[in-house]
Image 1 (spheres, one colour):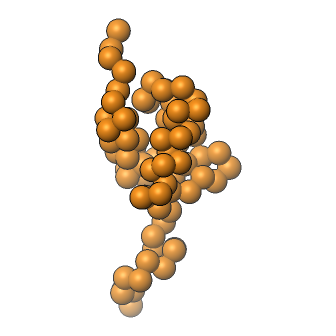
Image 2 (cartoon, helix red, strand yellow; image 1 turned 30 degrees about the vertical axis):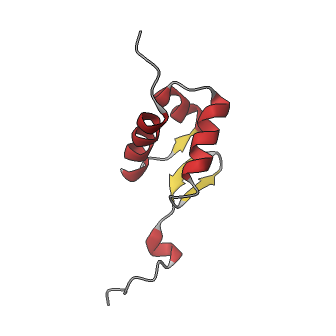
Length: 76
């Protein structure tokens, strides 16, 4: 049996998947970090304060900053 992930470890694991373009349901994220469903949702919700996370049809994902108009110069 493995030890429970610390919050920092759980956030890092979720960030890795999200930054690699994966969308995760709360249930999928729960399996990755071993937290309860409620605790997993709370972690993702708090992460969304600092990362541009959106939840669309139950899937957490990073917002596409190009579509969001992040202020960076466009390449034409």
